[in-house]
Image 1 (spheres, rainbow, N blue to C red):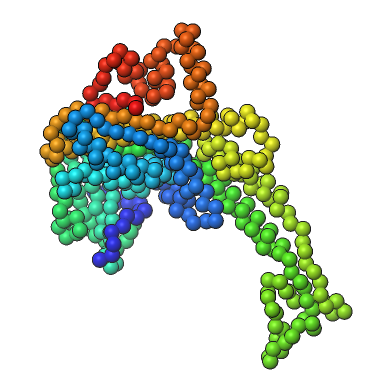
Image 2 (cartoon, helix red, strand yellow):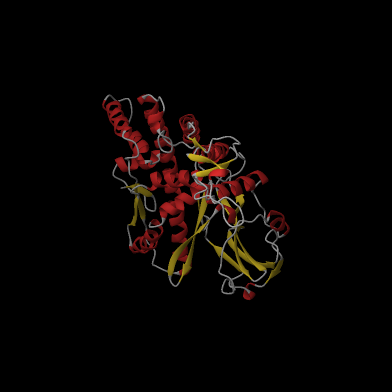
Length: 442
């Protein structure tokens, strides 16, 4: 049997026939495949992966989070910290393809968290707020010529939370194949149907990129951080190839008349180094001619830099993240504005990550009750993100303090802006109250 692996595959028609209510449009499926391909592309620039990696780095820079408040909280925190150790990689995957699912499960008395990538996750139901409340998760492995697929569907009906797992086998990656028993696969220990009462929230958490979905506005899925720059990325790769060709085609060389070259036993010219010597048949007394062309790298580099700047703008990165800001006539104010735009973008992603982690803990807490892992107890979760992404935040903070001093704004408004709390939480904190099971800022 080959090793277990997950693969990108589109099985919408087969899933429909199996009664799975797929909520992913053709446009979104195609876009996710494109983003995944660009992210995995091993081109010389690898811009898509660079954008996703840098956005993830800025988002998770010095992220600290802790669960506290009870014995249950201590148990949850132990499992939670294992996830946080990999949070940058998880965030990078979410940035690349618009989002990932964090799905907790119990193994040997511990709670582990699986990261489900966008191509292996299909929303099946979402509420009026656009939150995903039902989903199907796809997993595959290969054995010889056979392809085994497991579909795990989460749904809620008549107050029951239902998890249904079905297995399929076939020889075509584009199809599910025929349904078989889970006992005939590596998933033989998984219960085919589980129905639970008292579960009001999904037992998974969707970490979604917060930008408006420009591919399908009706879709609950997020979009890649480089979704608006895919065409520019292709242009940039082409311009970079021009630059490499400019240097390759313009290498110094010495053109030598064939009559000046030594010949082998078969009469062919012996060329010492084909990069330095090139043959010619001048037909006159010219035996040697130097080739030293003038390079046009400056104009090509300027064009490359302009494309990189446009990619930075469309990906909400500050000027200079990818481009050489020194080579462009940019004012200090323009650079400052680009940093502020990038900072606002990162803050939105941090809020989305915070929400995903809070929802994940809620699912983990529910698993504790279901499996009797730890006695009950309230918990609070704190978050601390590095605020050094851009220095201008301190200036904005000082400005808000002045507004507070003159009575223009209220103290709770500063908490909402700076700590990301909602209005009620901010007001309660100022009154010295706490909210069990809620979140608070470190």
